[in-house]
Image 1 (cartoon, one colour):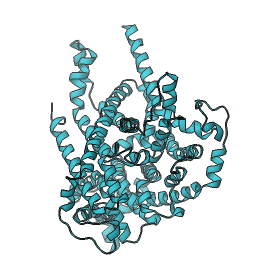
Image 2 (spheres, chains in turn purple, blue):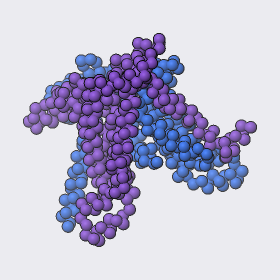
Image 3 (cartoon, helix red, strand yellow):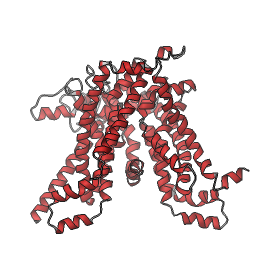
Image 4 (cartoon, rainbow over the protein chains, first blue to last red):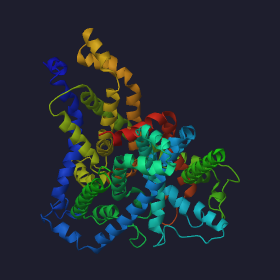
Length: 293
Length: 277
């Protein structure tokens, strides 16, 4: 009987899929669905035992009147925009260089990938140490150049940009690898034709490379935007949203609401709104950049 | 023309070198701090090259802190996560690569859809789920929660790998009288070792690096994973930078080791999960 199930072409694939599906259901799909239920309850760490009252959409209504939440959306958009411009610009430049110079690419690619695979905690501490007021490398360099040192992470105006720089450092390798792989799929014929017609290298880039890369660029920007918007691990390590909420992104506010203030239902409503923003961004990108040129 | 090429080459190389310096500087700064004697770590102005070399911080980290215990806990979690995810993802990946069955496309789309759910969205319900199952503050909490991070990626990675192995090899084994599972076990699996190794390295790196779930799901000091023990060097008003940087070097070592030995597979894998469909 068991042998029959295992060797039948009709049943075997389902048997093989079963463990994965059971695991994914329990650790991903079920929590995902439960989240909607949680977001409609006034669940707090204090009423976990006794049971939380059902409040309908009250958490969501509260959210859009919460000035800290609206502030966090603003901080998140700066954080995402700054990170994206840096990661995309540098990533595209590096991808082009590696693609057209396969010799040095072999060595440099491995070096450039390092930040992408390190733990967020180690990245956070490394940058705290780089930004240290007295002993940090960055302020030492500023002093060497005769400039005055900066309180990078404690200054309300600087902290967010300090995080953006660290995040560009961390995320650029992904864009680089992604776009380099996409460049490899472009055939060489259009370039040869353009060369015959006397096109400059800027013209081939502008009128061949960019249009052909467009779908890859769209996917890349979606992924980077989502990841950056959802990210809070390095922020938690480096500033915890401070000073004075200057680096309180939406993801960070979710963490604080749920796990520092103990407002689990409220935090869960924030994650649902974040999910909607993620979906909205994806649609927006595909509508604008992803359309066929 | 010729001068133009040289100029261009110089420009390219100087940019590559500049970016390499930017990439390596924070890591260099951590490493160099970890081998300075305590007095030099916080000397002003800081020294770019250490004046004297010392392993005192490593000695302190390994002998007088919870780091070793943390490494053991992390290894327990890592091995369990890798074993469970590798078995279930390779079975599913094989089914997706080799069989045609009703519902296959829907299942593939569902797995991809689950992969796109950001972990941050699931943190609260996962916490509640583990609490209900009475698994909070056990290593099982992490072993289960990390499956959510690695399973979809590993499934696609292994599916793509199995697809690259010619089907004919298995078919000839079937003709020779092997059962379907026998052919998988004797023919395909041995050929898939590089793919399985890449998947295992991914599972290891994810579980070794993760700290948000660990921070939220574990409370006891004895259960702290390696990453959590790093946080013990950070006190409210003071950070022991010598010890912290030494522990950070210890934390980076296995990841950098795997990058060095399996760079080609890892880079392909990093993209495989993201690009394909």
